[in-house]
Image (cartoon, rainbow, N blue to C red):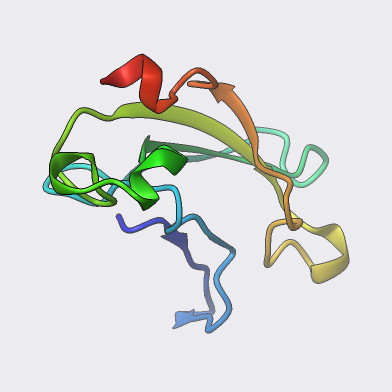
Length: 111
């Protein structure tokens, strides 16, 4: 829920996160990283889709409800990350997140 996706391999939780989105995920009450889907043709199409409530960059300096991880107005996003074939698909390619829905989830558009 807080924005970290981790893998379990052979019943063991892996120490290295697949992806860590804590800096953009709003993790208040029932918000957070809420959904995950694997591309139906994985690993040929090495995509993982994520749905989460977003904290726009402006919340880093905001206060009260406008601050990071607060309960003020927020929007959602659906993004895609690419699993790294060179790491046996165990981590996402750095900076591979692509916003599919919610590109306009900026502070100006949700307040």
